[in-house]
Image (tube, rainbow, N blue to C red; front, side, top):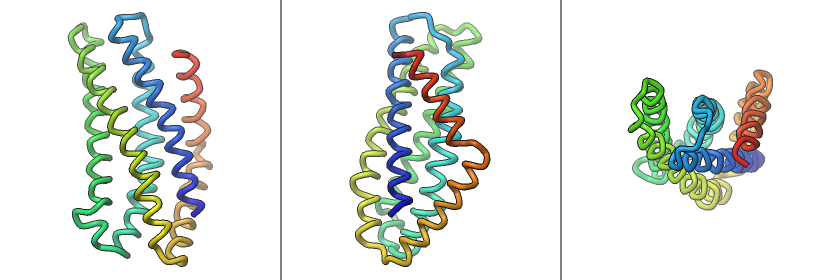
Amino acid sequence: MESIDVMIKEHDNIRRMLIVIRKYSYKVLLDEEIDYYDFYKIIDFIRNYADKHHHMKEENVLFRIMGENFKQFANNGPITGMFIEHDMGRLYTSNLEEALKEYQKGNDEKRLDIIANAISYTDLLYRHTEKENTALYRLAEKTLPEEIKKQIDVECEQVEKEAEEKGIQKKYLNLLKELESKVN
């Protein structure tokens, strides 16, 4: 499935950002001088590339269609687990943003919350993308009828096209390269 191949490539980009997040977190731990504004760029990437672009494709297309065709996957099954993990990632991202704001107001102890939420997010998303790549996506490829797979590919291609027109992929892949260059 073309759409699954695209989502796996997006996971590769998200995992590259997870490496960046870990490196920034380590610099916070060591109290090294960093541009804390870069964490807001990371949050922007998470919210708009990983979540709005990638996760919404999963939630609004792949998971929806899988759930419509196989109720056992949706109702307290693997799809429900993926939705819960998406929500946990959103919580860690919000907590990270709040910790950054408080740190910038002078609360040095919030560095601990910056690290905790950033690392919690990276751990969650690394395991999450692995489960999707090796289990859920493979399940879709093996169990869905060909006409349903084609429907998923068509809907995902439309999402990709609209995002490309808005420059989403280009913007966030450039941002990823920028942040990688700062920590390597």
